[in-house]
Structure formats: C-alpha cells, structure tokens
Length: 379
Image (cartoon, rainbow, N blue to C red; front, side, top):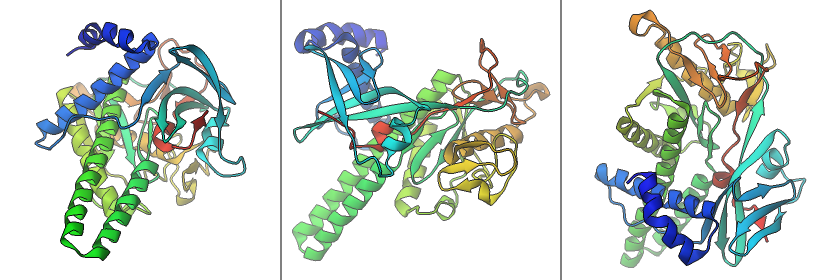
C-alpha cells in the first residue's frame, strides 16, 4: 500500500478518534507502517514474526509539531501547545547530553515521546555540520556510494552522517545474559524451558532492532540517490573491534543480510570492501597513522581534520569502494561517496551540493539519540 493510500485509509479515522495534531497522525502512521514492513521482510526470509506491538504509548515529533530549545521543548498535544523542561543528568558527567544536546554544533531534528512507569521520556535526534576545505568538484559518473561503518559503541554509521547507537543492544545483551545465568542456577525443567523462552525473546528483540537500522540505511539510500551500499568485510570483524562479542558478530552479519535483502528490492547493490586502515586513514587528506584515532575521536596528525572516528571510517569505506571500481562503463569514474551535503570523489575531493554557495563545509549527523539515550526526560 502506498503512502497516499495509507493516508486515505487511516487519516480521518485516527484524527476523529484521537484528536491528535495532523502531523502526529502522519508520523504515527509512518511508524506503524515501518513496523509492519519489518515483519513482512522477515516473513519473506522465512523467519517467524508476529503482529507488531508497541508496549508503551509513543508519539513521534518532527519540527512541524515540536519546537526544541536549549532548556525546554514546545510540543503539540490534543490540548494545544505545551512547554516542558528537560530533566538531565548532572552536568559534570560525561553523557550524550553534554556531547550533543549541549553542543552548539548540533541541532535537534526530531524526537519520540515515550510514557513509561508514570514518567515521560523524550528521545531526541540531532545532527551537526563540520567544516572542511573547499576542493574541486567530482567528475561526472554513474554511481553514488553510501559507506557504512560497523562498530560496538555505534552499531552502524553511514557516510551521510546517520548514527545508530550500540547502547541499547549492549544493555539488552547483558540483561538477557543475567536472566539466563539465574535460570541456569536453578537447573529445573521449568528453568530450562524459561531459558529457551528468554532466547526467543532476545532473538526477536534484536532482529526487530536490526530491521529498524536496515530500514534507516535504505532510507538514506533513497533520500540521497545512492546506487551502491558499501560495508567493510565481515570476515574477522570480531577480532578487529575492541569489545566486540559473538553477539556483535551475529548482529553485524544479520544486519548485512537485512540490508542486502531490502536493497535488492530497490535495485541497489551491496558490496563489502577491505577494512584495512579505514579507521586510521584521514578521509580528508589520506594520511594514515594509528594515532589519528583516539576512541571515538579522529584528528589527523597531518592536516588537522577532526570528526567522529566512525563517521570518518564510513567515508573511507565508501572511498575504498570507489577506488576499487574507478573504471566503470566506458572508463568513467563513479560520482562519489554520498555525504549529508555534497559528495566525495575517489580522490577525496569534496563536491558541494547543487545550488550551494561554495562555502567550505562538510556535514555529519550525530548518533541518533532516540537510539542512544533513555534518560532524557520531560515532565
């Protein structure tokens, strides 16, 4: 069913039954449709998937129905606009709030409002722009690549600056491990049956999470006109990533499968490239050194380029694919690696978007904070 058909079938009834703001109705419809698409995709892969259930009331906000300020947010409700203040952790703690919400380089682009255990939680999404030097435009070609980096702290990062945090995955992985350990101590038949039930719940939760990420990657492809998705090679990925578990290896492989399947439906190619030095190489000047990267921070020792390390790696993965395939049909080079604004060509050159004033800048998007944080509260 197309978006216009969904609009015709659902809009009037939902507005009448809920009195929700028009944009909230549309956002709710889109969220439900995404959940159903994830189930259908799992069916087509021969996997079990039940009817999607949202355990807690949720409202999806964008800038049409919310205004975000430094200390508070204005939200559209059935009783008109309301203003609520953020309740945040202590300022001296190293939290995502200080890194993104309190950072002037980042802009809040949307949020989800959740009601749980009598409290309201506002999960924010932000994006940022980072300066770079102006360079010559990329040559005309036929392919546009979306690079994707995989990791532990950030499960996936695209060259367009879309982040999916690994915090939720790690939280639930540890939680299910604790439940299994407690049940194994009992040793009874009932405990054994419960262990199997925990395993099914764990698998179901993680698969839905990975479908959500896969859908987001496909959205980036569609929004940016990409024809290829480039991942790093999955072989040996657990050995390369500090802190990675067998659960992470399973998650990366499953995510790749989901993206590959969904991309095929859109006529998009999915490739893997050699990951060597993609986390150490400067996507701006090409200088490679182990000390360029410090945890999630990247600063080139040669040119001084600074950015999130995983975002830099995602761009390098796209560039690695381009250089591997520089000669396409007729010997022409692919267009480049798609960024949030403009593209990088195979030589690392930056091409501003059409109509850009030519100002020197290259954007990125921060971790999707509705994935990364569960402690942003609005009361």
